[in-house]
Amino acid sequence: MEETEINAMRIAIVGAGAMGSIFGAMLSNASEVALVDPFEEHIRAIMENGLTVERNDGSREIFRLHGTSDPATLAPDFDLAVIFTKSPETRAAALTADTLLKPGGMAITLQNGLGNLDEVARVLGTSRSLVGVTSHGGTMIGPGHVRHAGEGPTFVAGAAPDTQGIQAVVSAFRAAGIDTDRTEDPDTLIWGKLIINVGINALAAILRVPNGALVQAPPCEAIMAQAVAEAVAVAERLHINLPYDDPLARVKLVCRKTAENRASMLQDVLKGARTEVGVINRAVVENGDRLGVPTPCNRFLSEIIEALEATAPHRIE
View 1 (cartoon, rainbow, N blue to C red):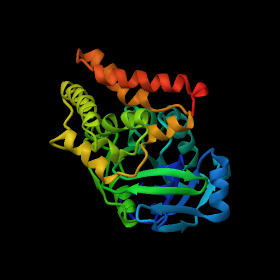
View 2: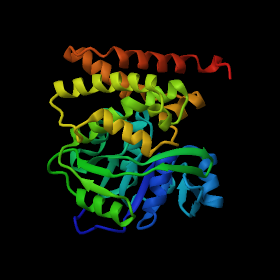
View 3: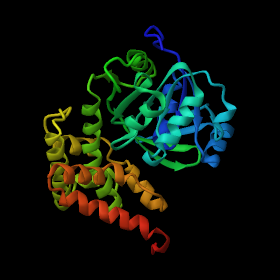
């Protein structure tokens, strides 16, 4: 991808759940966008009636986007693939991206958790792989209908120092009205986002509350503080430079900015679906075990979420 290709692109969103749909809608303001997702009812609703994006103030906007559940129906001429699938589907998403991208086209993972960039790079190579983090939040309301529950900056980095095209992606995002900057350290991005998710996702899913409720009750804040402190201790042992000075304050700020949002792990638990706890809280535990850093709070949160997954068919509503 040439650095001069800075605005309009052909962009494939691989994984058009809440966040994929929201980014697809925003990016369609400046680029040609196609949504790829196996949720056929969602895709059908978008194709027939458009994608409805609801905002916290109650306003709604309908975006006319192309969508498909069969990526083979799309020509392999996309400049960029934006991966928003759940982490267990990352390799499959990267393989799909590979079939959709033109020669030299790039993929960016905006997923939660550890390991996604490595998985994408194994398929596409480091020179074509990017990672990003975003403070935007979203909730799936129903087929063809999502809520944009929070906004904030987005940051992008390459898998390697010589990754090409980063500025082209940043410029395309900015042209679509997405506040985006680049950084040179992908580990900073990945761990910065991981710690936000460690403080919010599992706790919101267990308590079944929106993000904002977590900073309105001292008992919630105490658990959040312990989970975040453990993750920060692991990051420090790994010599990760976090992108903020006060991690707990940043987690609480994200909670307030996305107060009405249902965390992705909460949405999964409510649906009885598999969560991403393995690449969030459990990843902190595994790294802590390897490094000799105690992580009892994250271990307990992981075990509760895993128990919720295992007992989903027997849940009393």
